[in-house]
Amino acid sequence: MEAGLIITLLVLALVVVVLAKGIRIVQQSECMVIERLGSFHRILEPGINIIIPFVDKPRAIKVRRYKHGSTMPVIVEELRIDRRETVLDFPSQSMITKDNVTVSINGAIYYQVIDPKNAVYQVENFIQAIEVLSKTTLRALIGQKDLDEIFSNRDEINKHLEATMDEAGNKWGIKATRVEIQDVEMPPEIEEAMRMQMTAERTRRAAVTRANGQREADIQVAEGEKQAAILRAQGDKESAVLRAEGERESIERVVSV
Image 1 (cartoon, rainbow, N blue to C red):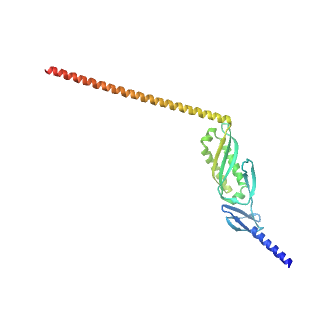
Image 2 (cartoon, rainbow, N blue to C red):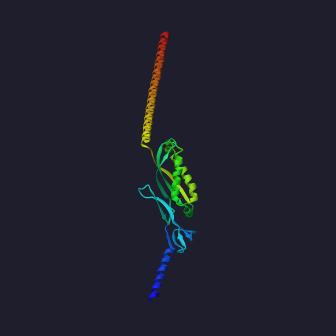
């Protein structure tokens, strides 16, 4: 009797374990890659999914992440793939511009997993691959531009980065939705020189504005004097005409008498 009860309990425990391993609940906006005997089998979509225990197994993916307040990345393994748009904010990297100025630039990449199978099997760590590709591409772009061009053509650099990331991401099942340069830090002496240059430029513009204003004022004064002289001349002319007509009329009266 006791042996039968023990066997029954063991069977029930085994059933519970099998059911627990065979039922996978996937949250909304997530998915799981399932392998059967070591080969790709299918993608588990959000909801309740049934797999064969000990035959089907979720494939873990390696993810490179930065802890809050740290510049050192950590590699973790996760069973679930987040299909929402995600932002990867990588720390500042030292780069050299075309005019040999060393700058530190950090950026943000907005990406989304489109094909989970390719994200798992086409690249070992897709987040690390995205970050490394973006850094190398950005470093090459910065090396082709002067410091002033980096500030004036930031949108162009972002678009070039986005196009490069999107092209590579198609193979990895990743869609780069947006790439942005966030901060550009310069050496203090370069920053001070740029500040002095901007101050000088503002001073020059102010002087030009004052000169233009004075010129306009002088023109207005001269125009006023011109108009006044014309009016005086016209007045003198009309006065002379009137005097001449008066004298003529006086002479005609004397003659007629």
